[in-house]
Structure formats: C-alpha cells, structure tokens
Length: 125
Image (cartoon, rainbow, N blue to C red; front, top):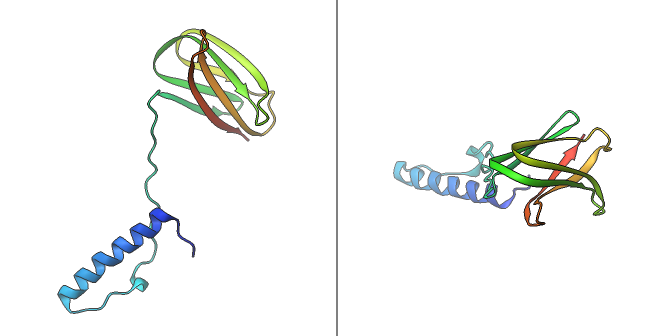
C-alpha cells in the first residue's frame, strides 16, 4: 500500500500516540492495529469567491458578491477560445456547454476592462 505524505504523517502520528498509550499500560504497539487511515481533509482556498458547477450541459458560475460587467470565456487545453458570455450585473452566470465534447476545459472570468477575476478548470462528461 502506497501512502501519500498527509496519510503517512497521520499514520506516524497515530502510531506515536498508540506507542505512548501502550507504554503507560505496559503493552507493545504495532502498526497492525491500524486498519485504515482516512485521507486528510481537503482544504479549499477561494479568496475571489467564484465557484463553478457542471450540471448536465450547463456550466454554472456562482459569485460570492454581485459582480458587474463580466466576461466569461471557455478555453480548451490548447488555449483556443471556444465561447464567450457577457453578464452585466449578477451573482451567477450560466453557460450552455452542450456543444462541447467530453473533456477538460478552463473558464476565465474577466471584468470588461480586461482585469482577470478568476481562472478555473472544469470537466465535461
């Protein structure tokens, strides 16, 4: 079984705690007592407050605060611009991605002046 770094740290920490408890009770500790370590919790950092979700053939963009004058661009892995949608003032935006093949894409959210707001990755199945 191959462990990633956070899992290995958790196993070693758990083993250390077990060893200290075993010393108090006069027992010996072993890794055989550890059955399964759950993965470390996923920490998400999203300072811009832009979230996306793919539902059926729609890409839903949610903004933490009401945004105005936005340009949403869908880009493929080659860097080609496939779609552009504009939103004047909204807290969410919906893009119809039914014309896209299955695969990985990026959405770039900009203000009309060209300032980059967010660059996110999504997959269409």
